[in-house]
Image 1 (cartoon, rainbow, N blue to C red):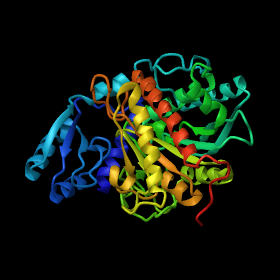
Image 2 (cartoon, helix red, strand yellow; image 1 turned 180 degrees about the vertical axis):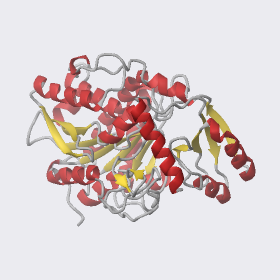
Image 3 (cartoon, rainbow, N blue to C red; image 1 turned 180 degrees about the horizontal axis):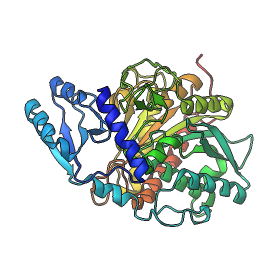
Length: 434
């Protein structure tokens, strides 16, 4: 395993030197049906990473489909794996590079903050410049620093607050998994819409007028730049792990029911779901948690944006047992996904992390719920064009940014209304369980 990982790391270094990102020509995506334990075990045993397999939807339990990216060099190996274990498969994408190319149609266009738009995915530098430009344009906007990354980048966001000291607070965290690009672009679209909504859009304007927003579009900035310049499917941070591996899954690293190789995570430092050598080993998770604690008295609700599974997830991830507020959380979630469906017909399922997507420990949302005792929901954005049915997974082309953001913002209007109705949006509602 170590020799192989060294070889893959060496190839990645060569890609940086050559100035060319890893290509996915003739890589295919298959959806696999997991029906028995032996199939699940077989899929969990495969190695992942550059020039190898990648799971777009991981093998977690019987009855949940798996989506796997297969390089042409491993097609014969994959066919043998499928045949030996009698796994049903369906081809979703015949050439993965086509999705990668569609995602960046304007990559040589202007990157200046004044030309910021949603026709392409921008660099960390451009996104940060745009956030500072908002601070100059709008009195209610303050650029905030939520932490620091391993490579020394700032985790920047904006505080939008038109009634200081009066509005309940909502925190939005986005792009903690670096390969989920549409999350940060949808977030910046939502920020712009909040600031420009008119009286003709009373629901959205009400969100801007009556909520104290803390919004961080891009938490895993190091990993994101790595996906842009080296390996598109990178998920983790970029901290060294051992001699040959890099990165920790930053959404398995929070100090909530954390354990090395715990439920839904890996203890193999080369795996995409590696939870880290210890809780809060990653500076990204640790410093962001410290910032959240510093504003805990201002927060009433926490929301994470992920991609892509068409889901709205609630605590808990470590257990099937529901939290005390489960029935109310489900009531909020049902109203929210109904509102999301209304504009474009996108269907979301909803429920606890454990039962709806997969068991997982160490997530930011569960840590916030456990520590601050406020609702903490996680969106898993759409994985296909709702209108055409075209599959793209987490590699949404830029034309999907606006419709995705529109339906999510619609749903936030109803989420806030329902949470207010149930008493969760009163000031200083959060109380630590510790």
